Image 1: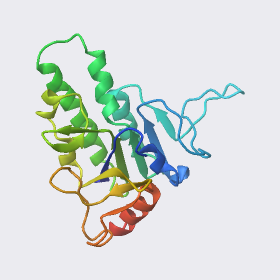
Image 2: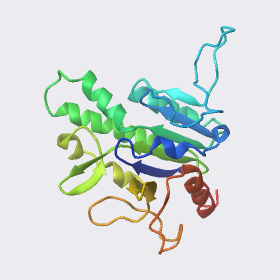
Image 3: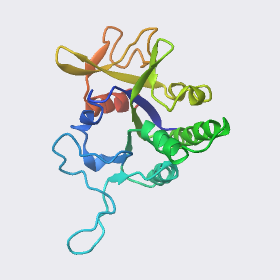
Length: 221
């Protein structure tokens, strides 16, 4: 069973930037929204890109077409030597499906969309024990609580994504810095093993490589 982490933040709070120190040789980036990486991206290569010699590049960045494609990427990752899978931004998969089905009416659509999201999360959970999987997503406020953004209340009634992740981080801004919030309160869904950094540590720099190293040591991967 893979180690699963959900990282939440508003747009512009540094979700993707948190990848800046990740070693591309050890990671797969499933990019659900096509956007340039906000840092020098030496080592990150787009999979399937046609090169000047007409060959097809085998890379570690996969542009995701839809939920079924993401599901295939997750399942195929089990055969990879790379043990870190990053999905950025997960809520976009649900939003794209919602737009594709915009003219469908009825409650069944949201039930099916919740099932599709659940299947993606469940597939990631089933990756081998030495995998670390990071789902990055936007936030929304619902009933006074900050949670993962989906596509509305009807889907929220069917699926609570945070419940499938043992670790949920949220990025905050403080004094010009972007930080991973490790301990939350009743107003959010943040949760993290108390012994990971010690009970007195409530946040850290939004450096996914540093967090991944800590998780790997903590779980003895």
